[in-house]
Amino acid sequence: MDKKYSVSPNLKYAAVILVFIGIATVSLGFYFTPEKTWANLLLNNYYFISIAIGATFFYAIQYITQSGWSAQFQRIPLAFGSYLPIAGILILFLFFGMNSIYHWSLPNAAVHDPLIAHKSPYLNIPFFFIRIIIFFSLWILMIRLLLRTSIKEDQVSGMKFFNKSEFYSKIYIFILAITFSLFTFDVIMSIDVHWFSTIFAVKNFISSFYHAIAIIILIVLLLNRYGYFTTFTKSHLHKFSKYLLILSFIWAYLWFMEYIVIWIAGIQEETIYFVARTQGKWKLFFFLNIIINWAIPFLVLLPAKTKQSKPVILFICILLIIGQWVDLYLQIMPGILGKSSIGLIEIGTFVGYAGLFTLVVAKALSKMPLIPKNHPYLNESINDHL
Amino acid sequence: MKTSILGIFEEEDSLISALKKIRDKNIEITEVFTPYPIHEVFKIMKRKSKLQTAAFFYALYGLVVSYGYVYYTSVISYPLTYGGKPYHAIPSFIIICFVTTICSAIFFSVVTFFIRARLYPGKKPNIVDLRITDNAFVILINTQPEMTLSDIKTINSLLMKNGAVEVIEK
Image 1 (cartoon, chains in turn red, cyan):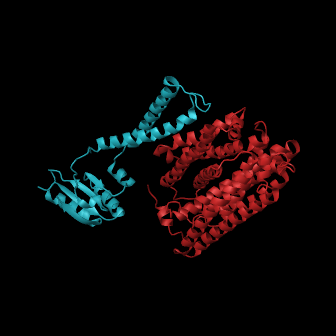
Image 2: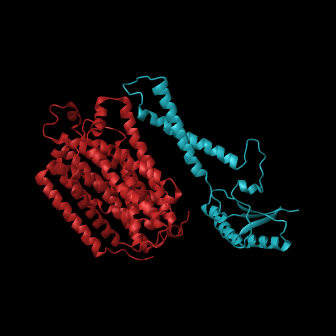
């Protein structure tokens, strides 16, 4: 039970190779199609930031709701949080590609465009990066505090550090509500600078929470297969899958809420967003998005038996990893590129970022005991039953 | 003639350990009353509920019927253009279908539950002990005619030993 996780050399080599593949494709991409490469960099930056944010949100609400069953898995979402400092540095590199991605960042974009001129006090390059730095420093600070409290708890038993974690979690979700909303507005919604949707932030937040849980489950299942989490049972899996099921409803609900309002009003400035996304090759992704992120998980996860089946959940988790990519692809690319085309650059960049993410998370996990030692709900988590 | 034995428990854990011991002795448990659903009780009693499956089909029924109804009214019977939308405007159908699906699933599930549990308005409640309406966990064992007095005594002591706060013979 007290087994400490250690990064196996094979995993390390594989991840490093993936990172190199990523670097190679990105540098080739800069040479051939710089615009597409910047768009892909933005997509993958945002992808893994959203996973880290969703996972730490999961961590925080487990404390706030005082959930017992998840206590032994709490180190995994916490380790996801350690990706954020690196993500923060990586996203700053977007500075060099602003003109390719954001239409509003062009030097004289505001001259003939009253809407951009109206938005320019908020949407300008210096303030954009100041905001990003503020968001990241707040997130990193809060995750540091949560991490330190959790590590300290390993030495001292009692409720003191649990209460502290709970308190920090409350502050963290409050901060997240504001900062992550603004972050999605800035980074993704401002690509289509003439279009706006107030539910956009909520939708993306739920999407990140949803897909982060899929990746948490994937990692728990993989670690379980390699002999960690010996007390992992079907009832834990059932509870994890319940999260997936419920979030698949909410994801579809919010997606549809955004769509129906725009569809029924039929105002040209708003419908243009969906018109662009239901034409040409984008149409395929438009429907793929709904099928992967809602229809399949919803129908598959309804019966209790599939909720407790490891192969089924593994399949759903891998599907959802693709799902988040498709969702973001559809939000980011049509505004930057005219036509949809998936090539090596898309795959290579994603693979590179995935390797980096794996490397960082595995290293963070190996630095602390995999199962928190003195978590007050640890026994409840180990003896959890349906 | 007393026909049933009631074991009253205050804790979930002691109820479950008692249930397991009684099951191991092959004594038939008639009913268990708990303030909230406990999965393990279902498992021990070997009871399976098909209500979820039924609810799924009720939902499907609601979906099909409401979609058919909306389709009939707005495409076949009274086609009306509004806001430049086509007659068969799927997004605006979804909300109605969504709500009626939920309504149908809930309504028919409740009806099914009432029929299965043989409940109807104005039925005189058959409460074995007042505490089952509150926070007590109760095991009900109907005594069989072939049971001897010593059998009943062993059941009594079995319940008592496993944490029952009170055992009542009725």
